[in-house]
Length: 168
Image 1 (spheres, rainbow, N blue to C red):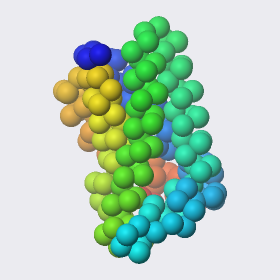
Image 2: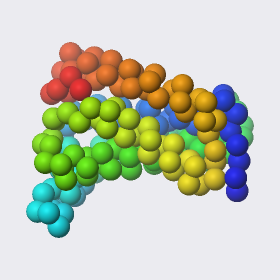
Image 3: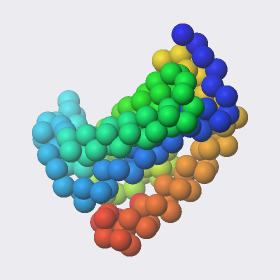
Image 4: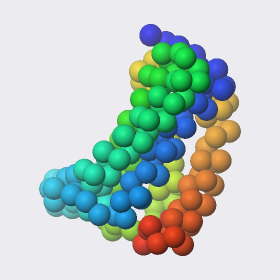
């Protein structure tokens, strides 16, 4: 089912990913660790304390709601599917970033520049492509620095609002 998305559809299906990535901060970093304290073969945490069941649920819920809202504007099944896929991709991309940070010995709350800002975005894009929905490559490239900058700005705001313990 290869379907090339228009530039506007590309932006529309990626909006839920942005919301999904930011939603867990509303829980204030509290919750049940998704990995339940399990360790990988290297003895380090699988994902760490920062990835929680509750945060994952909130991300999927908020991203899903935005996907349905965007669908209500476009009334195209590919936009709904794309929004739901980008939401899931954002969550899995964030997990991949945490997994990588744990492998590198980077503790929770410490920075891994670029990965911290774009892991969710790349996860969303990858899942879209994997499902046969092809986002407009020009829009993907244009959005990457915008997403990077938005991520930095919103994290600083969340830090100042007391929702995050670090400004990144």
